[in-house]
Amino acid sequence: MWRDFVYVIVGGGVAAGYAALEFTKKGVSHGQLCIISNETVAPYERPALSKGFLFPEAPARLPGFHTCVGANEEKLTPNWYTEHGIELILGTRVISADTRLKTLLTATGDTITYKYLIIATGARALKLEEIGINGSNAENVCYLRDLADATKLVNMMRVCTGGTAIVIGGGYIGMECAASLVMNKIKVTMVFPGSYCMDRLFSPKIARYYEDFYKSKGVNFIKGTSLSSLVINLDGKVTGAKLKDGRYVHADMVVVGIGARPNTSLFEGQLTFENGGIQVNSQMQSSKTSVYAVGDIASFPVKLFGDTRRLEHVDAARKTAKHAVSAIMEPKTTPDFDYMPFFYSRVFSLSWQFYGDNVGEVVHFGDFSGTKFGAYWVNDNRLVGCFLEGGGNEDYVAIADAIRLKPVVLDLGELERKGVDFVLAVGQKPPVSPTVCCGGGDSSIPLKKGGYLWYAVSGIVVAASAAAFAYWYADSGSLYRYG
Ligand SMILES: Cc1cc2nc3c(=O)[nH]c(=O)nc-3n(C[C@H](O)[C@H](O)[C@H](O)COP(=O)(O)OP(=O)(O)OC[C@H]3O[C@@H](n4cnc5c(N)ncnc54)[C@H](O)[C@@H]3O)c2cc1C
Image 1 (cartoon, rainbow, N blue to C red):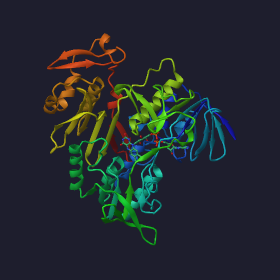
Image 2: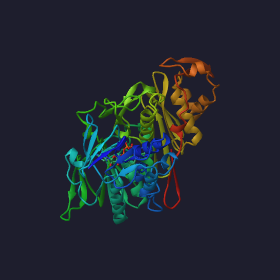
Image 3: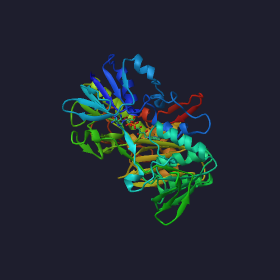
């Protein structure tokens, strides 16, 4: 069957949900927009899967965390799509795309045509087999990318309560799953090759804090080595893992969090690629003018740092999606995308946020034996990044504002001494005159304030949205707050 639409989104995850909401805000007509997803449920806030969804008590369940509750916006239930005349084609994989003919072929044999296509196919979990290890299909080996994975993990945690688990990988998924396993009364051993957890973002000192916290919850860390093979019994269940350093670790279940790969194969050879994803301009437009790419698969210009990045984070997915829709619907008035990288996580009672870039010299501040501490990154004498654990809303807003300004830092010791007060003081500076704040390009105008120089860079519009807090509502009505 042939189906014709003006706008088609391939992929039905976070970015698709936020794009759908934006389309309705921009006045899309009934019958013009279609979303094709191989998942069987309407778009939802994926980060909930490694947090509220895994809680042993009052867990988050759909429809509680459909997009766009994570940004404190409307919850788009399947009915919402019907009411807005948006066709939601679920449980259907797109198996080929022709960007010249502007057609998509689905696994059910339908051909869908579009005038504008938004690619929002996200990423998939990297499988053990892809690094030469067998065992992914064992019933007690879990990954975590989608609802089916999360459901399997919940069921396995129930079976293994009181038992043991190995978590392979020390990144976001590994850390968040380890915390959930502990909350579900499972003893965890984490195995990863790096010398500390979250080594792509954390400094060794920050990592030490989290590792010590995890150890206080009974988590065992085996670092500097990796999985060699899984030991599988005659029933097809994993009973343990052999590590490359020769050690053997017994386990009743295994959680694998060894990274993700962008789902871009449909478009290879048709679009320009960069950073392992689809290259887009500041309107999220690919090398084919009718095709836009958003979310995990998009490699887009980050004006603030003068380079291009592909970010596998929810805030980028939400904002690239909204921007693409704006660029499609209002091309003349949509400005260039101006994004500040923003990441966060929440484990146990801990909660951190990071803004900007973790390059250059790192300066730690705060009380690492308490509950509130952080780090600044200073590159070429400018403040480019800030991590804060245990901050409040005011702190995070101030950090977002300050990193946008990239103030010059002449004295690293001042950052250490003042801690969050440094960025809070940035917000207290007198309003910058429009001629200063709205200049283009990289033109920087130094303003004297206190003992240091301020540089007002172009477009200092406060990224209030970047610091906005996200909320997830579980069916129980309890509130999970995240930023
Ligand atoms: C468990 C988990 C926890 C996370 N927690 C955080 C967090 O705390 N903070 C943070 O910043 N980020 C987090 N992330 C990352 C964040 O969820 C992603 O960056 C975000 O979901 C990306 O949105 P997306 O729309 O690009 O991709 P996705 O949300 O992955 O959606 C892609 C969709 O496309 C579908 N699809 C793919 N190929 C096809 C095809 N050929 N045909 C049809 N449909 C297709 C997929 O099934 C999926 O539904 C987490 C990710 C996971 C997996």
